[in-house]
Length: 326
Image 1 (tube, one colour):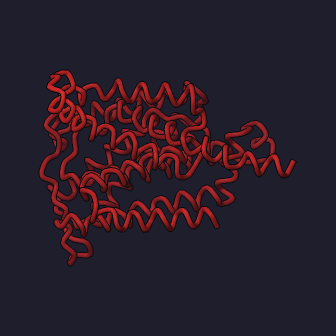
Image 2: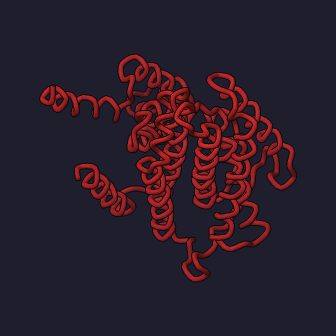
Image 3: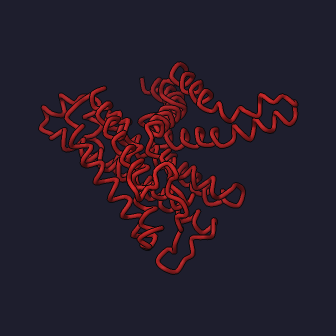
């Protein structure tokens, strides 16, 4: 009941948010929140650390952007095409990497993702370093104009809520319980008769498809797609979001994504404000040091909040209940 109450309250806040904040920024937060949740499905509930999720996030963005800008497909068809492209890419990468474990699995996903990056750099339809520009938003169901920021916000909110609901349903399904068993003790799951590799592959493809949904939606929101989304640093960024918020929790990756994206966007504004008030020019370059700041946050979370922010809060709240039961 508490969890349902929390979800309801969060939904009410999200519905009212565009009347208080900037809709474009809020939509970007939603897209990265879904991206982090998709990654958490793989690492938090299956125990697979992928360094290649940027390939699905950016690859789906390129496909959706090309479908809208060049092929002239409707909004829904372009979004579905991007998700299918991410799922297909996830299936191929999963087949190649899923039989390896630990650091070997991570390195294979990183190598394959870098191949996707260089393909995006050289492919003519991506426009290389210039990126894919001028992506139109189109119309929803052929009638609702998505050029209005407020209208698009609620469409993006519905997409992200649907994606999150699918993750919640997956985690609490028998399939999700098997994934947890694989993470906790893979050898025992094999001894119980489960085809571990098949379960891992399905989880990998599902995570890739949801990451693609987030990337495709982000391209529609911003109207462009660049190489930044397929670079390996994007994979590192989503790992940071998940660890800061709380790996293996449902709300943790969303909180982590909101904190990291807000920090990246607002640190420059804060630096300019401090430079104006204190007349110290160094503060004006604070926005360029966002990597150092996020790195310090990551180190602090690893040392002080091993379970992430939400994980530590949950542990503190559950500790008195456990003591009473004992």
